[in-house]
Length: 86
Image (tube, rainbow, N blue to C red; front, side):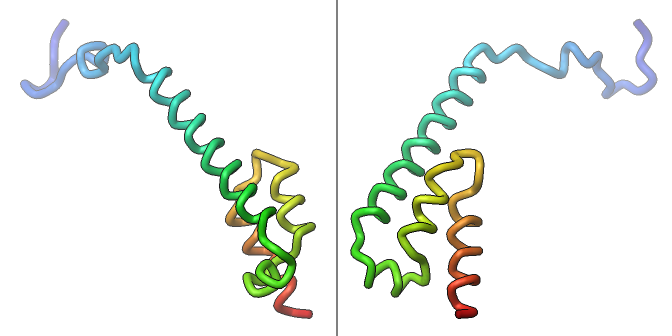
């Protein structure tokens, strides 16, 4: 195999095998899901006046909890903006 430049290496040599990557990705996803669950639980424990102070309503928190694929901050941020216009 001929290289064009002395610093070039084959692609296979540049990409080491990392067997722990899938495990690390799974653990990161698990931690993110757990963090989301704890945040939603703490929001649901708040009374209506505290949620109103934050600019959200209980139904906004329940809506954010329904779809785990949506970003929690995005859902609640848009709810705050919607509630601020009222």
